[in-house]
Length: 303
Image 1 (tube, rainbow, N blue to C red):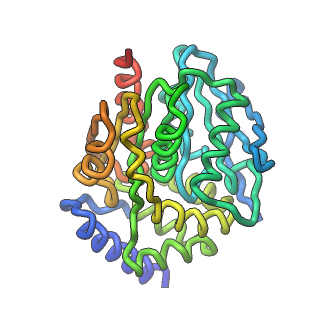
Image 2 (cartoon, helix red, strand yellow; image 1 turned 135 degrees about the vertical axis):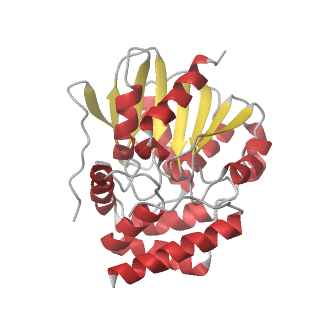
Image 3 (cartoon, rainbow, N blue to C red; image 1 turned 45 degrees about the vertical axis):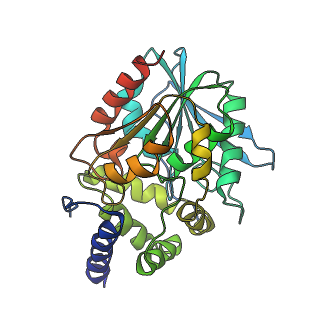
């Protein structure tokens, strides 16, 4: 049964690639869960309180002058950044990594998983961490959140980094794909399938860590957030973003350079789409060294 579901899932990805205009892509390699939240003695776990009284856990790594806030995407927690943190951590940065509501060590409400409520989580963490002139980075759904935050509250932003981001116009799925993603809220085997079909070069230990992380996300968060990011509708606000923006993509079976250029890059002044080969949607997990190199170069080039 599981092999049958995998074949169905793979066929859905191929169909979706055709819909969004992807070229031929490399095939992927064939109660709360325990989470790996600490990265050595230097990582601090703190909590911020939102305006709607949710407790948002976030990690602080390093004490450099440049604050970098890393916002995770759908069906995972801030732990998805662990590989990238190992590459970025150093004397220049203070990395701030939240678990959005419903994930990781944060509050797990039964409802309210909208993009606007996630923005409250980011605001609370930024305020609690006293982040100033910070770089805001987001992956996948976190990339959509980073766009929305930057379009709404850009006074303290130094730059914007979007990694395989969901466009501000959303990402409608074919019905069969939507049904698969929705069912994953209550089925860990489908969560694992989604991670597999979204990846190109995911190592077994990273797959295991991501699957464990996903299993700990509140099912209602997975289900409701799916509607939030697929139905995002704020592309008309992207012209308000006036900070330098880096859009990173690899061999993502869902988001490709042409799509991201048209849906995001063409709508944000001072933005650039940079492609590097060899990883899938989770480029920050699959190839953290290349991802970090692009991020370092971008930050170094900021005025």
